[in-house]
Structures are given as C-alpha cells and as structure tokens.
Amino acid sequence: MTIIEIPAGWPADEPTARAVQQELSGRLVRDEEGPAVGMGHVTGLDVAYDDERDLVAAAAVVLDARTLEVVEEATAVGRVSFRYVPGLLAFREIPTVLAALDRLTADPGLLVCDGYGLAHPRRFGLASHLGVLTGRPSIGVAKNPFTFTYEQPGPERGDFAPLLAAGEEVGRALRTRARVKPVFVSVGHRVSLPNACAHTLHLTPRYRIPETTRHADSLCRSALRDALGEA
Image (tube, rainbow, N blue to C red):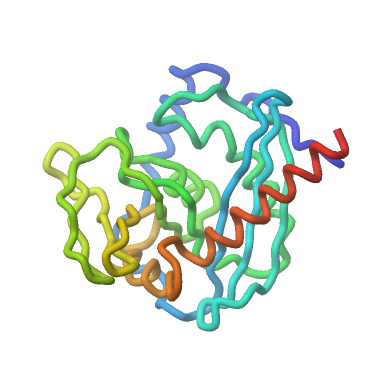
C-alpha cells in the first residue's frame, strides 16, 4: 500500500489556508453554462477517514453521463493533510483526492463532490477548490445544510428553494425524491446553478443522493478498510 504523503509547502495553519483560499477564489469561473446533461462523463468524488491512524481514503468513480453506468474507478490513500476546521475541509483531503483523479485514464468530465462550492462562508468550498485546481467543471451536492438559510422547497421531485447567505443565492435546496428531505446543490467551477441542479436530478433517478456519490462513498470506504487491513 502506497500512502500519499502531505505535499511539501501544504498549508499547515488556518491563516495560511485562508490566504490560499482567497488567492484561488480569484480564479473561479462563474459565467459558463457547463456540460450538457447526459453527455460525456461525470465523476463522483468522496473520502473516508480514520483519524486514529491519520489516514484518508479517496475515491473517484467515472460514470457514463447518459446511462449512469460505471466506466472507471480509482482510489488513493493518504495522510490527513490538515486538522479539522469548519470552512477549510478541502485542505484535509485534496492531495489524496487529486491522487485518485490522477490514476484515472478516462476523461473525468464533470466533477461531482459530496460537499459545497459557492455555498461556503468565503464562497470557496471543496467543489470550487477542486474545480480551480483541475480546471474542470465541478458542482457540490451535499447531504446536510451548512452556513446559510433556506425555506423548505415544495414536496415534489425537482422543487427547490434558494440557499441564502447575506441575501445572496449561493445554491439551492433541491428535492430529488418526492417528500424526502432535499440535497444542497451549489456551483463549484465553470457550471451555472440551473445546470448544476439539472445534473443533480439526472444523477438521482432512484435515490436521494447522486449515483456518483453513492458509488464513490462505497468505494472509498472499501479502500480505507483495505488500507487498515494492511497497516
């Protein structure tokens, strides 16, 4: 088992990480529509942790955007690269996530993160961070609300309500299953919010969370179990 080490020069404290966020956020592209729904590939990204052993396992699962069948998958296991600080979660996992992405041979297409993009205190969550670093279109689809207010969307699939931060719409609470609690969609990079929601609905034909996330969640947990078995 090869452990991805923390890159040299990786931010080690909160002020440095915030400064990196601020610098990278200036590179965000917010005026592109993004890839068409059902075209090309979509890639789910997720991580699993074992804090006692200071390990994080990342999974990248490429799906055919039309059929939602798995095209390719890759994993990586690395050291947790930053302590837990709300709003700085990306710094804990990005080196390992990038390592998993680098092991793919297929074009990842749209990146779908189990987390946030613009719906973030500094408008630069994990989906935005990964989008800027890779240059790829990205969205965040989170299971739980974070630092914003919202009204409950209508009860039917496709109903949504804006996520508001200081009066700005930073995402949407989107109902992917009728009368089931919503997911929280936000733009990462190079995708519009309506298109991000359209992709999310396409990726949830049967369950509340996207198929991309379901596959990546299962795979990263399996990779972590394998790594712990070898440790």
